[in-house]
Image 1: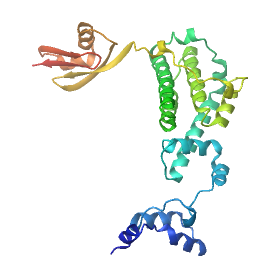
Image 2 (image 1 turned 120 degrees about the vertical axis):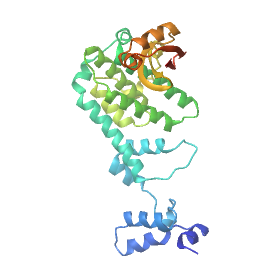
Image 3 (image 1 turned 90 degrees about the vertical axis):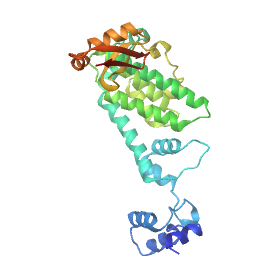
Image 4 (image 1 turned 180 degrees about the horizontal axis):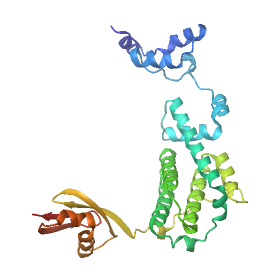
Length: 289
């Protein structure tokens, strides 16, 4: 019988005894133990008897309480167990550092970008799309909470929102107001999970009242409305271009926009259009010969 099979059959792990031996010998066992476990044995499950538990005080001292809270709540739904990993907590730590840097690097203009709901509803183009994403995040977050506090999926939505905010390049003051709204929403949603960093960044926005006293935001239904969508244009079943059309556009409108597109015209040059198939809000397929 191979060593790995023996360990699995007897529900043992390499960490059960090797860890104690390496400690006594004064050998740094982190990478070595992972290599042994991957090659001959099962990963050691966390338990006091195996001396492989994580001291929460050490984790808090190294990464901060917010990071530990974020990692635990993001790792799995509340009703499930999970296996603690260094990679997981380091990922949570990196996310909070990204958030900190994003806000502090823009702190000066974020403080000045005060807004009213009416101003934000006038957002156009990419700013409007970002605002829709902000309010979709709120709606999804509330839904996750209603389904038994599914904080892991709620946190995933918050992380996605930070990515969208980071990718957006504001071109004027109105764009900056949308970013400011996005940052405020992100901090409000994150506050029950990582209260310390949320409170500090909230104050850096110029807020005088504590974030802990603020209600969870509600989505703006008008912001969720879709005015335009991007759909693929196929020619004889092959993707050739993408065009933006009004949401809910009829076939004639969609067809007119597609046939005016420069890329589409290039593929149609000298060819006869036999038929145009339009799947509403989904795609256009132009059949040519």
